[in-house]
Image (cartoon, rainbow, N blue to C red; front, side, top):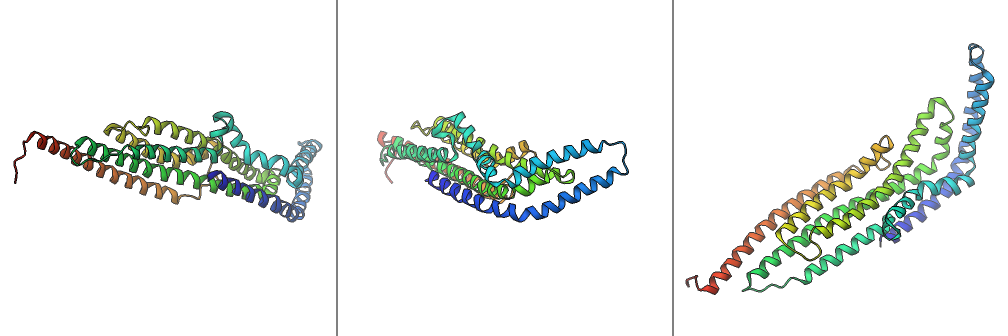
Length: 318
């Protein structure tokens, strides 16, 4: 499911970049030509009043810089063959190298998490056997049901937030790559060079997201096995699952902030602020469910004691 979704998104993004970047570069070239001529005229005018500078050296440096920037910005065939794949797929390549092909890409990792959660919760559900006169089975029912509910209430926000961030990041990076000719040329002019640095920072931010999210997904798979979703169900495992799910939801919202700090500014998907409110709502819901689960376990213990007393004949009729 996730691989189909992300493959479709990659196809749309790649097609959009290949069509738009050529048109954008053609529209941009006359404007950039005027700016370049104006810049060299300004350099010549400035050299008349600044005799200390080596004008030939300055012109030579400017020409070399212009040649490099213009080659990358307006040689769209070379740009699509070399720059676009690096930005789009470098993060996935690193993640595959770290985690292996089965869990390296974001789509594969998301699918692996989903399959594991469904399989393990299905196994837990199969162990439930409620008997009216057996207090142990009632306790097990409440613990198993609470564990399933808590795991899904933690899993769904985590997977939803992570998928949304990755999809928005992919769409944003396609806009980033379409606008690349403009920002690469900004790297030529001293006054706008900081804008080019910001562009490269956003590209790096996307690469980091593509690396760190699969690592987080792999961590999720390991933690849910430790938490007690492997079939060993106790009150401690239910509490541990709640704590882990709570932490993982926070982790899903903090990864973009972390990668933004590493790349030096606002993240490529920094506009998805509303997801944080959704995460807060999910965390509050999990808290309410856990409180209800505690009450359920208490009632189950009372039922177990009642069944034991009844078996001993300690309960008088009426």
